[in-house]
Amino acid sequence: MYPAPGLQEIGVFQQVLHPVSVLTQAEEVCLLLSVLNVAAYSGDSVLDTLDFNESGLADCAEVRMSRDGSTVTVTNTRLDVATAAEATLALDTVVSSPAGSTQLVVVSARNGNVRLVVSVPAPRDAQQAAGEAGLLIDAVLAELEPASL
Image (cartoon, rainbow, N blue to C red; front, top):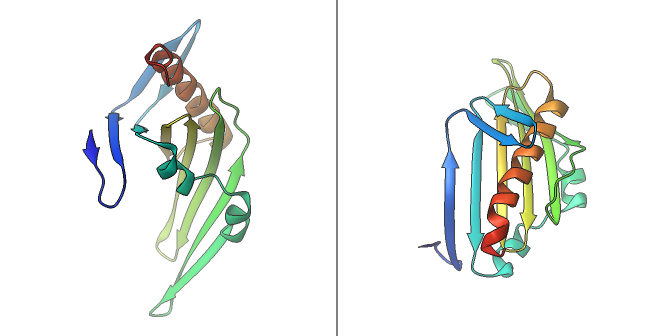
């Protein structure tokens, strides 16, 4: 357990910065160069401040920032993903600037006092990447279930 400044204790189970491969029944999920974060909080109050907010997403669907005559645009698009978690939010985020653009798919799920986040950089197909991330989240939740989330 690591106490976060100004917050309750937080336990980080695992952070994977390598290719991830999870075998679930007859399906294999491979998320290359993806990041999986799993954190357990001692209480719900920390997670309540991180709650998924639909109106907040609508307010930040597109954000433009300018400096020195150069503009960076961040566009967030919600993706449809279902997981076994109590709440799931999947976003396709594209950051564009005169130098080019980059894309990141993030699927975040909350189940009890556990938060799981899978980040997939530069996916070929954002919806497919989000679906595979959802399968990974389900596989991790199934492994954590005996620990009584």
